[in-house]
Amino acid sequence: MNLEKKKVTRNKLLLLICFVASYLFLMNISSNERIPKKVISDVGNLMPVKIKEVVAGKEVETFEQTLKEAEWKKLAVSIAGKMHSQGGHTYYPNGIVLDMTSYNKILQIDPEGKTITVQSGATWDDIQKAVNPYGLAVKVMQSQNIFTIGGSLSVNAHGRDIRHGSLIETVNSFRLMMADGEIIKVSRTENSEYFPLVIGGYGLFGIILDVELKLTDDELYKVRTTSLSYKDYSDFFKEKVMADDKVKMHLARISTAPDSFLKDMYITDWAIASQEEYSTYNHLKEDKGTFLMKFLLGLSRNFGWGKNLFWDLQEGYFHRQDGELMTRNNVMRSESKFLEYENKSDTDILQEYFVPVDEFESYIDDLRHALQDEDLNLMNITIRYVEENQEAVLSYSKEDMFALVLLINQGLTEKDKEETGKIIREMIDVTIDHNGSYYLPYYSYPTDGQMRRAYPRTEEFFQKKRNLDPDKRFRNKFYEVYGE
Image: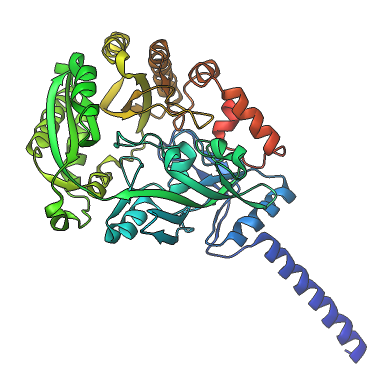
């Protein structure tokens, strides 16, 4: 080959290399960031979907390049954390899933101002470990600390604290990457239109990058547990819990056991104790007794007598804790591994219903009546309190509410889903008839009409979505069912 031909060949080779390099840069492809086309599902495993790929990003540049790819290929982008939402909120058919769990740095702690700034893939466990040495604690989070901050904001979570309501109350600001890659700061005064849409917005308006949250003091609490009838719960709560300024956190359970179905209750309160022994108790606890709890829950899942046994043992366990001392951080480090369940033929799902405090007794009577002839494997109901907060467009707490979290076991076949859906829609009708609402992060059993009754600003929410993201770059199955 003569010199001129060698130059032509070399130039062609260089052009080819440059083209491939440019393509790879545009696609941001690397072996540890991309998982090829696969079937994906959330923890409920009721809605498996084939997607194009999962992109796990540690840097903002990864998200920018992913959005460019999605624009070029006209693909939907969905945003995922721990994927504990159960209605396809974190994926879309043939779309790209952004896995945020690697984007998890603690950026800043301000002990004097009592704030923390974190990347959205960090978990509540990460925050607790970071702030505990400063004697600080989270204000509002779910009862388990395994979830990502971005995911919790997207569902506007709530928890055991009765002096603070929804998570939105504790957010100072966050950075949001929009569909075109532009990054804006969002607060109640800056780009404020996005604030009540993104929080409780299920990932439909952009990528939450990092968040500044308000913290509070870690305190030492004393545990107290009381057994009572469901008929007495509302009055007890108003007179003995809310009226007592020392009580900071609260959790109740109502029986799902056949012998005392939706009648017997026990409640656990955490009240301010003397802080002299704080340093003795402020080490963070880890899960314990997981095997026993999983075993008992398995009995409850499969046998009526197992539900009776589990109820009796649970109630006795919490009564034995009466008088114990726990820090706020540890109260909010509830055991969660025992809830993990995988089976080829069935799954555990959640439902959550919100009902006004004064409606509780009549609501439970009507709910019991609705379920008495139904074959629903209801394993557990925990009850929390959420004060009124309508800051989020999709706000579930239209007034001071009790939140009932239902754990249900159901089959995976289409017939199983049809039967469970029928019962759930009946329960939602009962809830709405009592001026209540239901939580949106779960399977799409509710009808479109039920959503609009429970969330009067539904159409406003989806119209804002269409206005602010006209190409519908951010999509998920939740949007497909209720927004389109």
